[in-house]
Length: 142
Image (cartoon, rainbow, N blue to C red; front, top):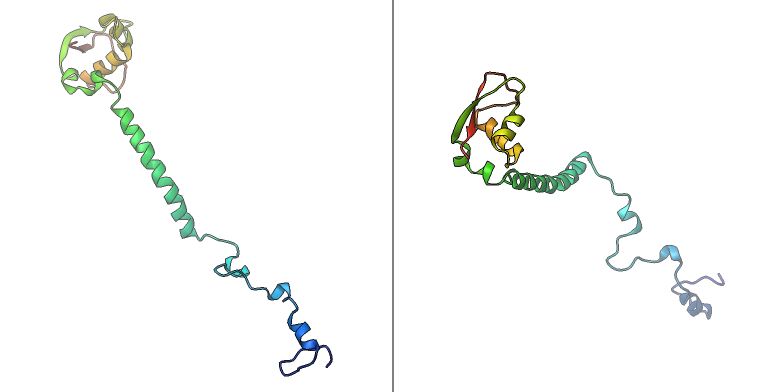
């Protein structure tokens, strides 16, 4: 039994064996650190993936909604003031070859034609820009 270390032995070899460094396999992890196999590969269940996607998607959708509602009111006073939209001015009759665009340019030469077309459509409850010869259109008052 020479060279082995036992608690009850008091040979001269015992202190030398006791001073040997522990083997790497027996080394303990630092305090507070997880054991090696405790944190294996992280896997998400289907429910976990849904939660992660929702956590990412909800703030994005809220930001898009806020941006869209800001832009919806950005039409200026011409489109946002209901008192200016509801007052008809004069009435015109659509002629051959006329379009809403040509009527808007002819009646408001210095104005923004897109806004005038939109106001004519709103005032006449039109869902499309198609007009027919002989059709009567109410124009905005201003």
